[in-house]
Length: 636
Image (cartoon, rainbow, N blue to C red; front, side, top):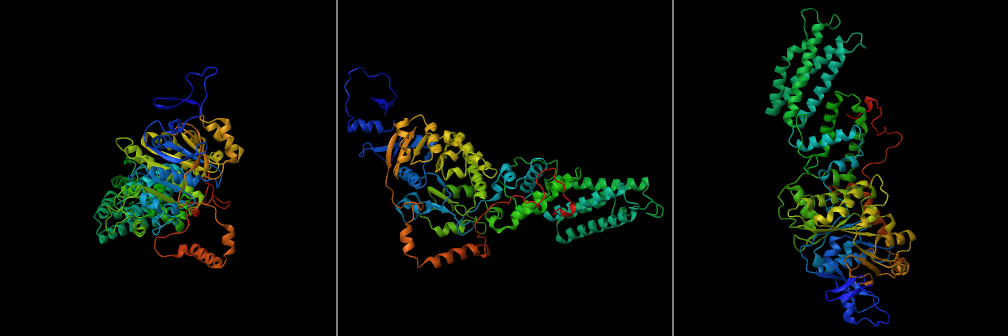
């Protein structure tokens, strides 16, 4: 502890060195208390100093939160207990309106914050998960994704697939009330008139007349059937369009292409070609006008492609993406082959019930506000509408919290596979930061995000799957302080954690670290501790840590405070469990049957969420834009 005692308290550094033969004395208890006391503001008790067992180690709460923090150490060294001790200290500061959200990768925190515990009572904690679905309330509405989330989730290539997907999602968002039957019919008519045009100018066929005759007869019959169908359904918009199309196209009889001579006995003549082109052009113009009216044409623009507005993923797959592909293929036929793998991925995703918690969340009233209330525990059930309640209503009522508010939200992600975990956490992180950025005045809605096993979300070396979550949390680390979003990362492998995130952590709580790379990273991460202090890292006992950084006056070797109702991550008693083996068969059978039968349960409950999409195999068409695919294989 190198510094000086001023009237205002302990100050780091030396202004004037002591002279030769200056007296040296042991620090008194009051002087030690001044050394450990924060400079000002509320402080939480982390534990007691090892060098002075009666002295509490105090951490400036506002600095800890504003400058981010990291809890590091090998497995079993006490990281999770330290996180809980910090939250206990925050709760003791009388903060009933705190917003603490824990990303629990291993399902450890639920036991520590159970409703029947003192901690659970004070924090009114609510656990979301671990099973995706209505019983545990784990839902991630897909329409909260932004453009980059969609592209990463479906692995859309940049050349053709990405623009197609972006515009198709925008179409689906804009056209929530669009007549999907009408849109499908427009797509089929467009495909037919494209065939008419290609056949009329084809030089490969010896006699295209008969094929054209059949194609035009089919078109006439189809247009008439669409008009009658719209009339029967009482759809005035569709009826008006088809009637207008009949007039624009010169009436249904105009499709016969009679020229005053025996039709089709001779090769197509100029008059016939002209009439065909006029017919095709007029129908195309009418369709473009109708698409513009529906908000799906090139004359329409979305105010914000990323606005979290509801759309149906099924409608995207069945209607909007195929329709967009059809439109673009009119000018570039290869678009169909380029987009084939994108459609296959989306179809495969929808066909797998494991992703229902993400892909099939139905629309409900005031969805974004309801979801944010759910995450941050603010009058969660205050605006629920009968018949249009959010999908987590069952889980929230079953939990029976003491009130509709809670200060701590635990998102249990332990049953979500790692390759979809990053997609989920990235979306949540971006959503919370985007909300905080929009709050006015700035910083009026502060929150703390706790990342357990943070190296899984923000690894030092990005993988394809982890890229989105790395970007989201690194942005919070760099910019979150301005908007009141604090980050607390906990990791057993600091060397595998993003350097960007670790560099932004103003306070480090380092437990036992054995790996030399991890030790070296901690040494370089902070200027506040001496090498002698950090050399103790490999030999620290469980529940002991070195605390250093901006939130504490001096680097301290601390014994973290005792906590009751410890997290589930504590070491199991192997010997005791092995001695009592009578229930092994029952536990094994119960677990296996629940796992095996999860997909067959009725209702929206779903089982383990695994990878959003498998990697392409050798028998799957390539993803890049240079892929060539037989149109017979295109799934639309």
